[in-house]
Image (cartoon, rainbow, N blue to C red):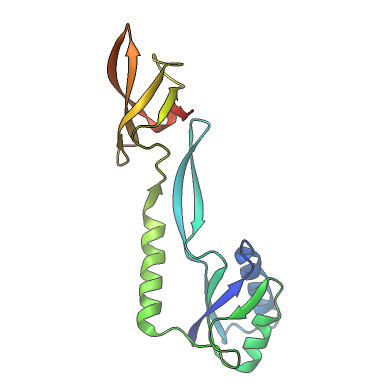
Length: 174
């Protein structure tokens, strides 16, 4: 079996995967197909003061399918709603080489284990404090500490500029 890259309509990767898995089960083609991979990473975002973990596709519009590269299997995959084409030449799709597959699988495993935090603020940005004793204060981001999900903000308290350290969830952009 070889791994092939299939181009899908962006946003339909999960739909294509489910349809293909259903067809494989119905036609009992388990010996002709292996893994169906949608490379994703876990992304943490702050929304309305709460941490939300969502999956972000590493390659939107693409899935990787392990399968026997015969014409019948190619036609089956191409017939699925949402699939546009295989990557490669028009007449013959080109399977991924083993080192490419190894790199892809390693990237998928790493992205499952680690969670990437999206940094919602940049140095010099104006923000409003939404939580804590400094709620409703307006300040400027002085420094960002993504590993701790904290930000150093300069706010004016009693006429003096004072640095305070707050979590990402305690601020919103202006």
